[in-house]
Image 1 (cartoon, rainbow, N blue to C red):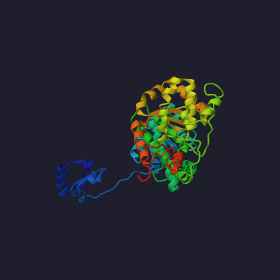
Image 2: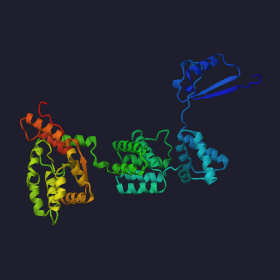
Image 3: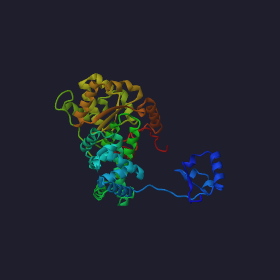
Length: 448
């Protein structure tokens, strides 16, 4: 003490002290020895007692900006005679995430790994991170809605030994940067980017809407959550990327409202269940069980031509489908092709009937029929019929749906009896159903 020296005590994570320890510390702080200096460190200062805080000087430490870390790493490399590229320093700065110590540790590891010459590719390899160029390819494919290019770029990354979780986080970070550029118009302090990367990011931000960026971020975030719950992390990432490339096929809120505003006051015939603006004519087969003449008769015939009498009442109580003619043609084709498959298929109802996907729903009491259709031979017959009728090769799914159950049908029958045994719903509701591909689950009628 006489020579101006002090004994310094550093207490890390002071907020974890017990109440008794705080009381003992408070006594020492009230009457500290002249030669002792206490330094308290904590990441949760709000948990420290006010009586302790009032006797201390407070200094808040923040994360070091990535560009500052890059400059410091470049200065260290220059003094140590290390050939460190600017891009490699940026990669280290991004990985350090505000901690200069972590950045220096990576630099030290790189010197041991590759000698005095440090490149960005070496840093990516050491850290197991996805290369920025490959990530850019995947991002551009998603922006362009190019499913094939996105799948190839993703496969190249994974085949190169990159962990799908790292790839997902890299994609999330890139689209987050796109969101900032789209909203703020310039990078924020935490974005360690070169001038060329900033220009490219700004160019990409001009080709994609903010709504799409937020949609991508939400889906990738959900994908990362799913990846934590499975050991096969590749599949969730590939599914998410394919879905993002097909985002244009989904209705946005604005488009949905515009379609709702354009619903006509009087009901007009609609062609496609998924897209009422396009009238599709089913393409019959050239020959075979579902010949052109047979299918034409079915397309023009009422539903009773292919369904049993027991199904007539069911159709009248809310299970009518805008693509009835397509469905009837499919049933006829299957019936002529293989009666046993027709028996199972006739228990189902078309819920979605489009060129990309066909979903056939079954009530729980018809689960056996659904299971029988899942066999490869029976499924092949159904897919052949669907493809022949609509002239495309959609994905066919068989699903158990609760709203197709007997209890749901009984409730709908009661409702229609209360409304005067009416066999048609309000035409405005039918038009909205055509626009959005809806199904009647419960119609309480007028005045309900």
